[in-house]
Image (tube, rainbow, N blue to C red; front, side, top):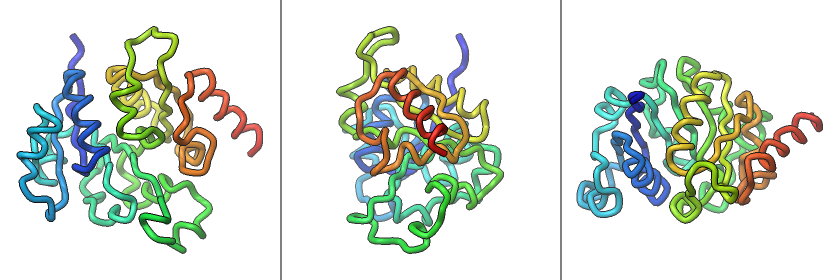
Length: 216
């Protein structure tokens, strides 16, 4: 049996703990790091994501093959991006002005938000995924491989091998993975854009990327 990558999750909110729960159920080794302000984090994780291990940021990075960043967008600066050299890093964040406030530097940047994050450490292998469905959908919509009603999730990134690794993880937690190509295509997955929050099949989601390429 092929050894599965170990996974670390930054963010112990609703998204992070829902992901941890699905990943543990799928057989992955999962570590999770929360905010220093979160009290009784081990108790919380033990209840909502049993089997996941609470770790310090340093421990999480050292022990994880894949790092998922699931903190609020406005807290992205608290994540130790400089320590992610060579790691597959999943940007699962969304820019929500009602929550994060209006960020002029983000609004004025022509790049996708994931490309902006990539510039924090060009040595990491950044992919955008797991952001375009709600935390509750991660369990409610998961279905076995081959089910005709299986929902699709996209993976975009400039490293094809990193995209392939995450595609395997997506399949294992109950969704069809769609390769969306380079990181710049991540805009399709952002709030206010075509794929965000929609229940789509693999063919429908692939079609949205094709339409975006044609319109570019």
